[in-house]
Image (tube, rainbow, N blue to C red; front, side):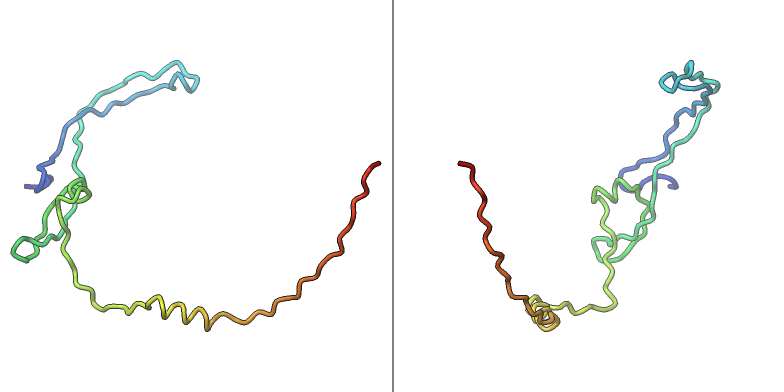
Amino acid sequence: MARVCEICGKGRSVGNSIETRGKAKYLGGVGTKVTGITRRVFLPNLQNVRTTTANGTTKTVRVCTQCVRSGAVRKQVKNAPFKVAHDTVADLAAKAVVAKPAVAKKPAVKKPAVKKATKK
C-alpha cells in the first residue's frame, strides 16, 4: 500500500485549508476574515528504510518518521569498510609530553612593601 506506514498504519488524513484576508487585531488591524475553505490532504512523512529481519536478511520498508525515532524500526547494520586504530590514553599522554616545548620561567621579582600613613 502506498502512503501508509508499514509498522503503525499511519496514512493520509483529510482537513481544511482556510484562506483569510485582512490584518490581525494584535497587529493594529480590524481583524482577519475567512474568504474560503477548501479540503486538503495531510500526508505522513514516510521514509524508505532498510531493516534487518529476524532471519538476518535485509528488507526495504516504508516507515513514518515517528516509528524510526521511537525505535519501532531498527535500521540495517552496515559493516565498516575499515577500522581506524585509536590511540590509547597512555600514547596520547606520551605524545603530549614530547610535543610540549620547554618554557623558561622568569624569576619572580618582589616589590618593596610600602607602609600606609595612619592618622593620629
